[in-house]
Amino acid sequence: MAVDGPSGRDRCEGIHGSSTSNQRSILRRSVPVFVLVLMLVLAGCQGYEPSVTPSPTPELPTPDTPDPRPSYEQGMSDYEPLPTPENTSADTEANTTKIQLEVIALANEERADRGKPELTQDPRLSDIALNKSWMMGEEEVLHHHTGLSGIEQHKKANYNCGRGGENIARTPISGDEINWDLENDIVYINETALAKVIFNQWMDSDPHREMMLNERLTTVGVGVYLTIQEDEERGTRGYLAWSTMHLCS
Image 1 (tube, rainbow, N blue to C red):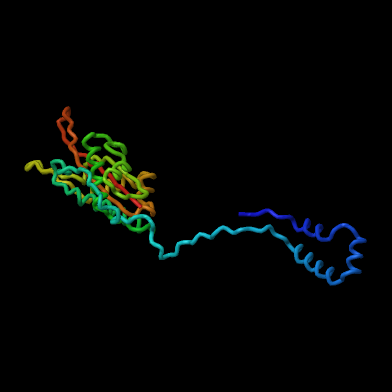
Image 2 (tube, helix red, strand yellow):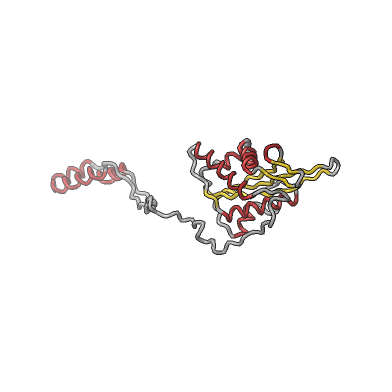
């Protein structure tokens, strides 16, 4: 807190006075006193500064200071898993867990090429992402607020995300991603090819790519849910992959 005080000039004028005769009288009577006063004048007029009471300087954290935010293991004892579907692959032979992990692997390859930190997969976050994909697939609506928003999901599951983001995608499965065994009525999914398509959907969109490569977001969960797409008029059947990526700091 600053305390105002008189200026240096005011102090000098107040000490010198304004009467010449009085000054001569003082000199005749007491030369030592004059010398002492002169020393005080010179000392007080060389850059006077108002008195200041300094504010306490805050202590800066050292490199060894731990992050004050709770870790993922701290405060997770109350974690409550959101419901997830028993079957995530419709009537196909797809391994959706493999698709999820391959999407994360592709994202980490891209991040490494750009000098970004690696994403760490958290199974709990993958379950939360799968819950969103399931809701979108069942309602056939691609939207961040289908079911619950990402923030609402984390809150309901008591999951400590910190800063986070969500990518979603709907992918028709065709071409190299699917193989029909008509004789045995079995549908095989090429998990590696499908993961590449889902990853490229996000990479080809500026906001989705920026979210996936954000260096401040280092924890990830991906959920993939397959649904059947029937066309009764044409008598055909197809498949859709509903995908969600949750990223947290």
